[in-house]
Image: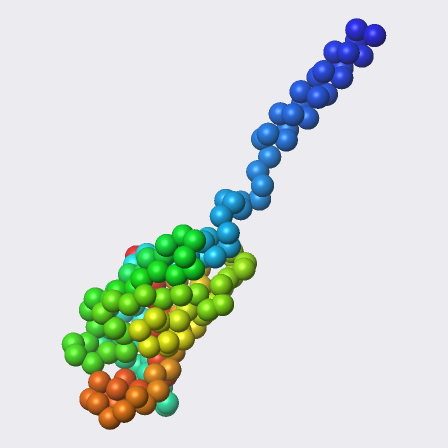
Length: 167
């Protein structure tokens, strides 16, 4: 009887130690939107050593050289489903990005390992599609419609694609 008691105690202790030591599979417990938002946060830049990293228009024009010093800094506020974005660099004057703006996920990502999602720029409702998303790189695609005949809009109206790497 004493041996059985020791054996049962050892089995319970082993089971307890085994269950405490198990990993839950890498999920840090945060909602999927927060995990994607945290990965999306950071400074992203164009790899100007490669051609075709920034394209514009149809037929597609390579604008990589114009954005060799471009940096997009994204911040995400946990629980808010959005954040802010600011840029530096790029061509002086006319460019498709505003200096600083806020953004929201549209719709909110429900899978923490997603490689594609959409964000909406708050100032004008522009929807930006994010594809090939990872912790080290992403592609931003969007189209600016003709908003009237100003020099800014005429120079940037059309489809844009930015291939960015995390700094």
